Image (cartoon, rainbow, N blue to C red; front, top):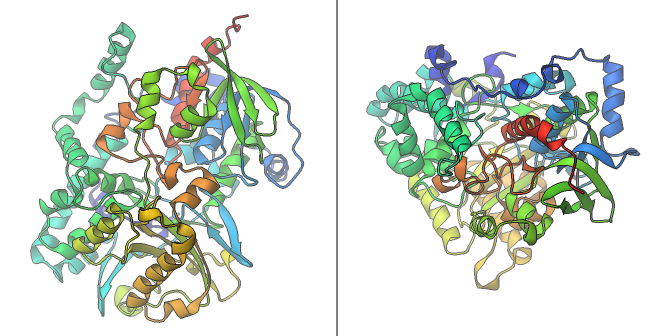
Length: 602
C-alpha cells in the first residue's frame, strides 16, 4: 500500500522526506516476545488454505454454537483488541487459550455495529493510527482481512471561508502556514524534525516492560540498570521527554510558533480523550501520544475497510488459526484465587473455567475493585487504584445522513482532493480552552471541539448506496453533570450543540441527518466497560505512565496474585488501538510460564 493510502500527521512529512533511520536500531527491544518463549512457539507458521482459515475463524466468532472445554493454559478476560492480541500471541506460542467476552460481539471498543437500519459505524474507536506494525506483521493481519483505506489531508475550517490544511507534503503545509505566519512556515520543518526525534525516543520505550526503580532487590536493580544501559544513547533527547511530560500544549508549541491558528491545530490533539485543556500542564505529551503511530510511516492515520471491527475480527481469526477460542456473552464476575494464585474465573451465570494463568483486558479499576476479592490484594495497591484518574469528558456520535457535511471553506480544486474525510473543528486555542472550562465546572461544552470523519467516502460497505456515515468524536461532556442533572435529559441538547458547531462550518448539514446516536461517558462505561468512559482507561499524565501505570510496583503487567496479569490499556504504554499492551503482557506470561507450570500447593 502506498503512503498516500492514509492521512498523515503534521510531522510525517519530515519522516518521509528526511527520515534518519540511523536511530532505528539504537534502542531495539532486547526482550522481544519471540525471544521470551521457546523458539518453536513463535516460528512463522504456514497458513492453512483460505477456505480452512475461514472455517476455523467462523468456529470462534459470535453468532454460532460454541463448544469449549473448561480447562485451559490461559484465560483472557475481554475481547478488546489488546485481549485478542494477548490471546493470539499466547495461542501462537502453543498455549491453550480462551478469551471470554461479556458482549454478544467480539472487539471491545474496536467494533463495527449497525446503529440504525442499513447503517454501520465504527461505534466507538473510529480511525486507525496506532496499531503497531509489529503486531500486524507477527499476527499476519493482512492475511485475515485487514485493509487500510485512504484518508485525505487534515482539513480545519476556521469560520467563513477561512481554513488551514495539514499535509504530508512539507511544501504544501508550509504554504498553508505562510498564509498565517511567514515565521511559522519557515520554522515548521525544524519543529517537525524535533518532534519526530522526540517521538522516536518514546517509540523505543513502547515494548519495554516498566521497571520498578525503587525496589531494593538485586533483581529489580539489574532490571533498572539494564533499561538504562539499553537506552544510553538517548542522551540529551531525554530532556525533550521531560518537556513533553511537564509542559502544557500551549507552552510547548509557543516555543516554536507565534500564530494562534497554527498552534491550535496541533493543540487539538492534547484535548482528545483527556479531561484537560491545552493550557493544562502535561498535555504536550498527549499530542505526542496521538502522533506516534507507525502505520505507513511515522504518524500515519487511516480508515479500515469494514470499520474498526475489521481489525479485531482479523486478530480473532489470526488467533483462531492457532486454536484460540472465544466465548461471547460470558461476563466474568470473579477471578478465582487459591493460596495466592489465580486458578481461573467464574462467569456471571455461574460457569467456572480453570487455567494456570489469567490475563485481564478489563480496566485496572474493574479488575482490582470488582473481579478480585479485596482480601487477596495489598491495601497499598487498592489505595493507588482508587486514586487512578479515569474521569472522562469524551463523547462519540454516529450519524446516518443523506449527504456528508459540505464545508463552506473547502474547494476541491484548490485543495487537491475531492472531499475532506478527516476534519478538526476548533478554531483557536481559546476555543479549546473554553470547551474545557465548561466541563471543568460540571457541564458539557456549549461549543464543543469536534472531529467529523466520513469513512463512507472511501468505504461504501457501511451505508446504503448514496448515503453516508459520519463518525463524530469530541469534547467535553463530563461523566457526571453538576446539580444532579441527568444525561437522559441533556443528551438531546448536547447533540444539538454538536450539530450547531458543524452547521456553522457546513451550513445545512443538520438537515441531512437521518439518525444520530450520541454516546457520552456513562454509555461508554456501560456498553464496553471503559472506566468512567475514559477511552485510554485512565489519564495519560506523567504520574500515570510507565512504572506508575496503573500503580507503582505493579506496572510490569503482573499483579500481587501469582498467575494473574493485566493486558489492557490501563498498562504501559496506555490507550489507543495499538495492541502493544496485549503483546507485552503475552511476552511476560511466556517468560513466567515455566514457573506457572509448577504444581499448585495442595
